[in-house]
Image (cartoon, rainbow, N blue to C red; front, side, top):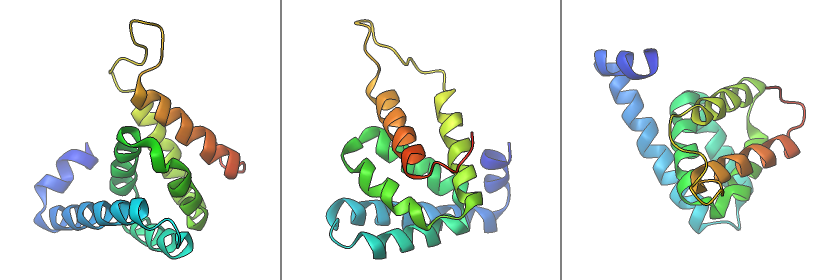
Length: 133
């Protein structure tokens, strides 16, 4: 309710949401282009996440489900997150998993978005084993 309705109800929150979307999309383009300076990009990423973690993680997970080539780069950038941000990421991953979309194709293979989400989850918990589900 609050993620969808409240941002549309109040203009100030709507502006914050749009700024977070714009900044996140810009940063995801930078991640794809500039993989040499991951430390700087990881810190910028953490700064955007601290402002609006649910909105930013929603966009990041959608982007990584579509283009799974830079999963390791983004997960490496998660090292600058706080424990609360990591909990929000786990919650957002669980929300993405419960979508009503098909997870298995007719030929018994997993869908690409679900496979990418499993890859993100696996790499996240491999790097940050102290996080809980």
